[in-house]
Structures are given as C-alpha cells and as structure tokens.
Length: 336
Image (cartoon, rainbow, N blue to C red; front, side):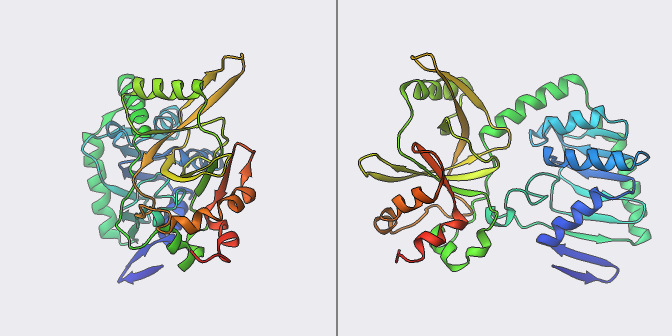
C-alpha cells in the first residue's frame, strides 16, 4: 500500500518490495548507501547490467558487520559497472538516481526483497520515495561526502567478511515479536497469510545414526556454537523454517525444536561404517517462528493427525516435509 505526502510517497508492505525491485532493476545509474546486502540480488543485477551496458552503480555497504554476503561483495568488485566501498558505521538505507530517491528501512537482502516472508518474521519494511529536486541535490551532496569517507574493499577485508558471514549463518537474526496463541491457531484464523512463507513440518521416523550424531557433535564443537540443528540425508528448501516432529516406528510422537536453514547452509559429509556416504545439513535452533513459540498448545489432539500429515508430506519413509500452509486440508476436519 502507499500514501502520498505532498510530492513524496510513503510505501510499505508489498508495495515497498516492488519499489525496491523496480529501482534496482531499472535503467538509470544508481548511488546506494545501504548497510546490508544479500546474494539474492546478484542475478537481478547481472541480467540488468547486461541489458544496460552503460549503467553504473556506486555502493557503500557495511562489510565489517557480517551481514553483507561476501558473494555479493565479490560480484561487485569483479564488475566493471559497479564501484563498491565499505563503512563500518553505516546503517543507512538510501538509494537514488538523478530522478528519484528512496529512503527507507529495508536492506537489499532476502528480507528487504521479500524472499523470506518478512511479515511473518515480524519485519515490516517501509520507504519514502520522491522526485523533489531540492531533496535530490541534498542526498547527492551527502553521498559525495560519505563516498569520500568510505574505504575501498581489499583482500583482507573480504577474507574477514567471509569468516564473519559464516558465523552469522550459524546465528541467524530472527525477529521474536510476542504473539498471543500458537502458530496453529494463527493458521486456522488466516491461512492465506502463511502462503509462501517457507515454514515446514519436518516429520522424521528415525533419529541420527551413530555416525551422524558423532559428526553433528564434532561440527558443533569445531564451530564453538551450541544449539545447531542438523538433518541427516534430507533434501530441504533453503531460507526456510522447520518444526521438527518425531514420529517413531512404534507410534511415539514428539513435537520438538523450531529451526532455520539459511541459504547455502553448511553441509558436512558422513562416512558410514559400511563404506557408504551421507551428509548433514546444518541450521540453527530458534526460539520462535513469527513470534509464536509453540506449534500448538493442545498437543494431544494434534498428535492424532501426525500420521495423516506424514502421508501427505514429500520425502521418503524416513522423513518428510509438509508445507504448513497446506496442512489445513488435513487438520481442518479435526478439532484441535
């Protein structure tokens, strides 16, 4: 949605996402003072710059924060059409061309571009955009000043950024807005709000193998990070949340942790005693999803439909995932 403020426009929600994508994917030269950048924008910029070979971008980011994907920084450094610098003090989100400015709250990351279901995680992004010539000149003057203060990115900076990025992947920032009720009640109340939100039930019938558990413990020890989550020989969507549910061979059911799998997650190889190989996909345990700390309060009733959910899931007999927006078909007929 958007609201006019004289010669400016205030945009928020999905309209803010559209504004960012339109601006970044346009033909005009851009100057960007945006702290955090993800890899999601690389393909868009690569295609755009190929279509517009004379287009130029200047970017000031905060590489030292650990919230700039090093892949994005390397992409910029290798592009003849992009200049990039860094400022460790930076937290601004300003993008402008000769004709328009956008000043807002969103970074150019998965959250700002709408790839991770930002509304559900609690982040509500907004911007003010306009074409006022006086404001544009003020923004341009400010940029020139900040560009002069920012540092060129060197090899050591990039090396350190890769280390910081790996640390951040193990500790994703997840908004924990307090909400009443539980996640299941929220789905029943407004199921459409959970479409394409990348939340899944991960229903598994067997726990880690001895080799898998040993590898998990070693990775956790080497990383110096507790509360890592791992999935043995699973094919999982990235940038996604998972609610683990154990559904034992003898019928035992446990509703366990809420976890988050980052984009390009850590994957560790496993070698089994019989000579076969496997893998562990790592994520991070999170305290809540969208502010909801529990899947459901009435676990007794919910457990009764787990077998049906398992049958409806995608995977194999050892484990299956169910998109949370699709489980209405199963539990709408059951009072929970």
